[in-house]
Length: 441
Image 1 (tube, rainbow, N blue to C red):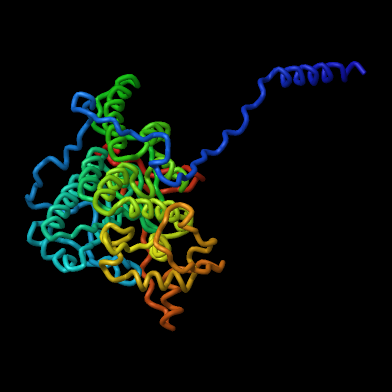
Image 2: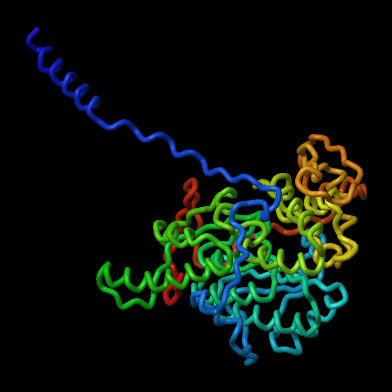
């Protein structure tokens, strides 16, 4: 009996300690976001007049204000292709750009002028050359009156400062950004993504801590002082481009040898997916003056319906577009008065709406009960489209079913050439190789 007494005392001591522990915190409830019928009906509407004295000084983008440098350049850390077609699965990525002077770019883009849309497929690192390319393309697109511009990007990141400059160029020159299925947008590429008017994401987006390769710091305090200055610029950039400044804080907690892969919910939460909130505010004011309140109400209803029915994490860019094209007819788009301002109008310009909508109709890509736009706005009446739940298939499969023959499938995209090799570890991916020197990520 005596041999059991020490064990009994030990068990009693453990029980007492367990009873004294504080109760475990309840699980953090998921973030809930609900839609409103109209932003004007919410409780955050400002109408008071403002003077220059009322508005504090804000950090302004630098790249949009500087003269474009037309000196000879090459793309040593990437490849760029330019085409007038948005259907990359069947039409490919266009012509590879090898010359970047004004005349060469004008010649390459002139064939897209009649359609009014072009797509740049870029694979590589974000460097000064990438920023210069975006500046030059924006200038030539303005000269040719090509107002619909798509950046189809696949990048593992690069220079932070160049990503901010390129993102400001993109923001000022109105680009849609794609991260197609199989592509990535990691590290500083996320800042480029933030600058787009609309972001369609089928690939993976990841972030990690910025590294100061040119730092002279020898203590944590010195390094932190430098990083605070860099992150201050990042926060200013995110704020003026409608993304959550919390992205910068989240980056600080992820070692630069790892990647925090953002979930679809996080991309929406941080303002990195879908319509850019900052640009949406500007567009609302402009569209109300040009197209009227009814147009704006229908556009808002469409955006909400797109996010609900089309923007699923298992769909690539091609499926997102096909779904959106079919959905918008229920809201009276394209609008007769403002066709170019209608959602996904770039597809109208290249004459692909009918084909893409037919693909969506054949496959029932929506796969969900039809959305009733009348409950959110008062769009033009249209015949309801019956929906049936079927297995989702790719647009290439739809073309095969429609034409009776399988079209050639595009080559699968590999991860953009860069300095990161990913090893999956759940929500965080490890980078097997160290960050290249002289790179501020």
